[in-house]
Image (cartoon, rainbow, N blue to C red; front, top):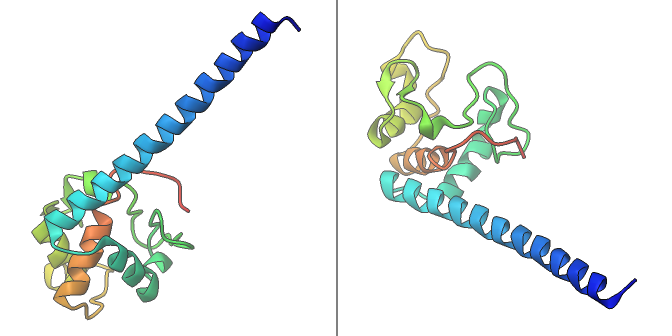
Length: 141
């Protein structure tokens, strides 16, 4: 193989590798930006919210991206919930309404299937923060 062809192939390989690294950095920055924005909107901690979601078993009813085993089919998928206009088909999707909904869904819709889980204000804020990181539907992890 001529040296000039090896050089061109080397440059091509380096360009592909650089593109992959750049894409990875951009995805990470996008996730970090979503997390920061969600936490500022809700006053919660998204990592704590994700842990609460797992501990409470929310995935037994909902598909929740980023939560292992959250493949429930009783309630709606929560993929992309941060981008929806409404919550529970009746509330504007605002941070205050999201916090109220996860904390006391039966007070908002007594006929709805979502149970009150006895969440503290902090837990409701944390869970809302995690849910607001779910900006775009992505595969379940």
